[in-house]
Image (cartoon, rainbow, N blue to C red; front, side):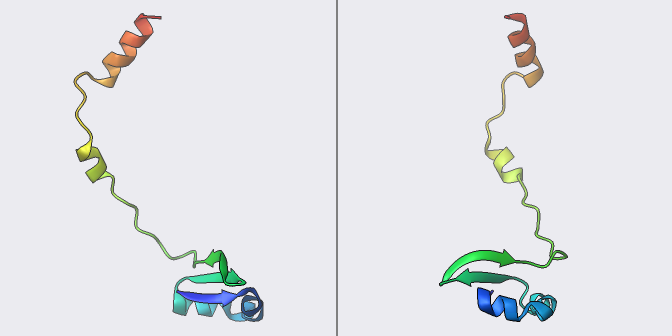
Length: 75
């Protein structure tokens, strides 16, 4: 990932699209601290799978439907 200072970013605005095509992602810094990240819009990030999380969760003994009905009846 390429790092650019604010001054370099201002100078390269005319060809920022080409830089993003080559680098993929860039970080803009001010006095060495990152303040912005530039990414191309057409760059798609993979959607994380939650299957592992669901598999780790314990199975419920009663369905959520039964729990909601019991809760409503007690009110």
